[in-house]
Amino acid sequence: MTTSTPVALIEVDATFAFGEGRLPEAVFDGLEQRLAGIRRRTTRERARGDLAFLRLGERTEDAEAIARWRKSLPPFDDALILGIGGSALGARVFDALRPDPAGLPRLHVVDTVDPDFVGGLLARLDPARTVAVGISLSGTTLETAATFLVVEDWLRRAHGASAPARIAVVSGEEPNPLAHRAADRGYAGFSIPKGVGGRYSALSAAGLVPASLSGIDPLRLLSGARSAAERCVADDPRNPAHALARLHYLAQWKGKSVAILWTYAARLEPLGPWWVQLVGESLGKKARERGTGVTPVAARGPADQHSLLQLVLDGPRDKFTLFLDARSGGRDLTVPSGGDDLSPVGGKGLGRILAAEREATEYALAHSGRPSASIRLRAADPESVAAFLVTAEAAVTYWGRFLRVNPFDQPAVALGKTAAMASLLGRPPDAARAIAAHRATTRRTYA
Ligand code: PA5
Image (tube, rainbow, N blue to C red):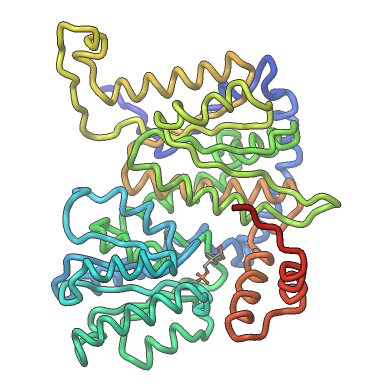
């Protein structure tokens, strides 16, 4: 009897990271020693209940409650997700995995207050066939408060006393104005567990509620999250989060100040903006004199082979590329064979062409001495994508430990939120007043 090893949900391949002009393998191996300290710290933190994002996969009761709520909803064709940053990006990631991309209900993530967009969207939708979810960990975010109130009013005008059945709220466990309004008005309410930060919350109700509206089973996401969490804390040289953290830190140490996540499967593309937020906000911190962090960039293959690739191959040697693809994308489509000049692609599957393009880009980078690594998911499916989310979150946490910064706070984002709110209330902070005065006296415009 033959037994086959199950395909891992996620695999990191560092083959092209090292070598001529790329990263020094010996230093990568040497980082194992510093990792020992990080591992001990992780063990202590988990023992006292910290690193809550690693335990989200265990919260199956949350997923079951979400599934029950989903079943109780009145009929709808459109779902509005009102949230921003970590309270919106996961919804887009999961929506791309929906079994029938063109099917109903449609999900609309509203993470802007642009009146053209919001007004245009509401004008196209039928409130009689729409539900809405407001998502905000803090429950105070300006953009989300604004769009939530606009949509709440729109639904109330159409449905009167039955509007609450169409509205739900996801927010943090701490008392907050959004949760308070939900309780007051009888909306369904879900909470993001204490200790889970905004950009680490995709596998909490913040992402599971929208996922359920897109037809994704939250239990499948949690199963992938559980299995990845176990791998990412394992004391094992094949731990994928440890490998990624070491690669990224080493690349940064070698002067690669730009990190690119280059997705190939179209279903994985929304992971790009999600990862950009995770890396940018977690590691862009005041440290030493000049600050630390790298500039994260989301690239889409093969479209960016006809855009960014020229810069990545021939431009400044300041980039580290992480390719992300799935072993199996599900369906394939064969290009018809023809007898003309277009025929070399005839008879080939589009999936094979896509894989060839990714491989060729990896080889080209390696050949030019540009470091890269690849992440291969088992498939573009809920389990593997959840595993990627957890692995990336753990890797960024460990990378932050290498840099000696706190990967869980975002003081600059908080400052921006406070300043915008103060300005709206007619009480701009001193710094904002000084900038406004500067603008008034030294205006430079060109038209
Ligand atoms: O990671 C973070 O904490 C932030 O980027 C938040 O996700 C973002 O600011 C939205 O905040 P909130 O969920 O409180 O509305």
